[in-house]
Length: 59
Image (tube, rainbow, N blue to C red; front, side):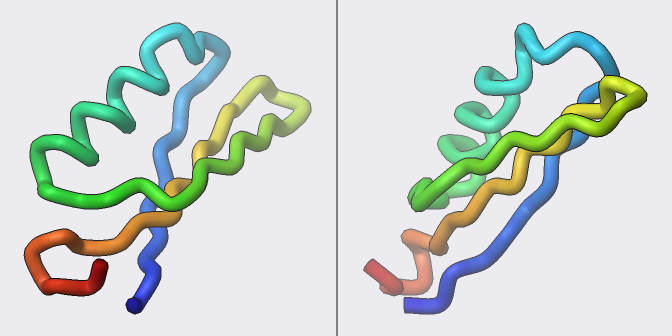
């Protein structure tokens, strides 16, 4: 199983960040492994999404 990473960035407002990640997972046939959220001093939030491809039989 090869894990892959995708980054999502948001400035200040993270209210829809989880919805964006979930929509991406569903629309691109991925399986979510983990999400790590970080924020810098300028209020830039970065979600690091670790996933695998369902379509490649990596389950």
